[in-house]
Length: 219
Ligand SMILES: NC(=O)c1ccc[n+]([C@@H]2O[C@H](COP(=O)([O-])OP(=O)(O)OC[C@H]3O[C@@H](n4cnc5c(N)ncnc54)[C@H](OP(=O)(O)O)[C@@H]3O)[C@@H](O)[C@H]2O)c1
Image 1: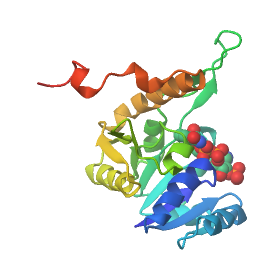
Image 2: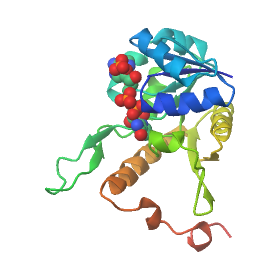
Image 3: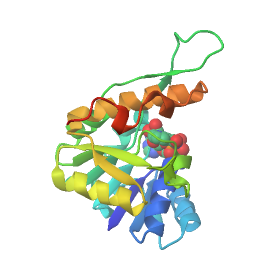
Image 4: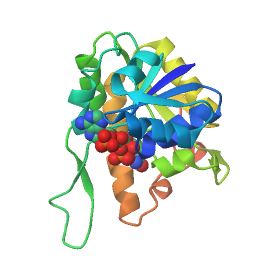
């Protein structure tokens, strides 16, 4: 599949690099095309680099791997119409109300994926990959304590959701459907909560029982 990656940072490298290694045609795009070319050369596997418009126009699927405050500019790119837009963004901001000596985050915006969909209404927006750090997506480890690393995926278009789920499987991850795009805000909230806990030294994984003990499973 042809995949455009907008951005050349940690997420672009982790996910774009993984998809290139899995055999997809990857085109990175950045404000500075040279940076995208450098990343493509580093990633290898035939990946190429160019402008943001080129990456947007190239991809059947396009990963938005930029800070939330860059989205206004990026979503004006030509070529995004009708694409599957993969939104991995998080609108984290430091929590000004956190007690002294602690560090935590709040969301600067609580429904980024929905805003993207409203800005490019012809695109099929799918929220995924926003919860774990880029280093996790780039690592070889794909199971922890016997549980496969899973990727909740939210989107309204079934074909687009299937496509992104397939891209997660190509990275040896286990996708699971997490509902329509109106639920993407819960993935955004889950991320700010869990990442904040991790930063504070707590194991977010420890706050959830396994499915069999969750008492919330359908009989
Ligand atoms: N890093 C993580 O572990 C992680 C995990 C989950 C989700 N996320 C989310 O994924 C997104 C990308 O994170 P990241 O860590 O990969 O970011 P990053 O390493 O800081 O890279 C950001 C990229 O965005 C580009 N960019 C910044 N402002 C731009 C603008 N106005 N127009 C066009 N391009 C612009 C930068 O390009 P220039 O070189 O031109 O500045 C750079 O390539 C963020 O929304 C973040 O919240 C990150």
